[in-house]
Image 1: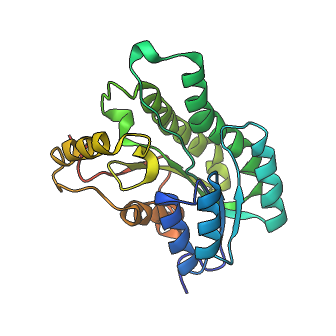
Image 2: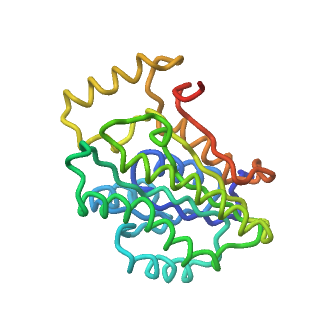
Amino acid sequence: MGRFTGKRILITGGTSGIGLAGAKRIAAEGGEVIITGFSQQHLDETRQALPVSLVFRNDAGDPATAKELAEKVAQAGKLDGIWLNAGYAAIGTIDEMDASFFDRMMNANVRGPILQMAALSSHLNPGASVLLTGSTAAYERLAFASVYSATKGAMLSLARSWAAALGERQIRVNVLVPGPIETNLRNFLAEDIRRQFEAAIVGQLPLARIGTPEEAAAVGLFLLSDDASFVTGSQYAVDGGMIMH
């Protein structure tokens, strides 16, 4: 008997990185996983890796897809957990900010989870768990990532409000706060710039290394599982000590 035996968990953005690592472990621990993604290649690879899971395309940045997501979930049955993990990252100077840059980031990282939660709330079993993926960017003073940092700060506020709203149903809401983790999120950077960026980060970390998706997912699954049955409105950093000061 695994921690997720008999449980059905939805993971948005679960076809790569931390979400995929979590999906694989939930399945290994006896759970049923519903996974959304955006990249067709990642969708196909996830279907091969987790053939018994429901895997489909869903764009968190498109407001119409929240209803579509709820319809898919209704066909599968009630949920015991939701991991709102899908996200988008880009960088730019203050002078480069425009409405298009702002809208794309906010639509994917803030409006998307809000609309998804609104559509999915009624599909949660009593005692279910909700997990949001934040980022240490919310704390880091990143000069070139102000909008992204703001979207992740919004996750922290949403979690506290949702924890208060859903507590009467014994539904818990928490935030996973990854730091430097080996994921696709920084792939928009040129390879040499990405290596320099990661080397600079490693130099700041007490553990002196980048974390793995599996390490971040392990903490996320603790929060999704009954092991964290008295934890709500909290944020858990998995960051090698980056923000411990």
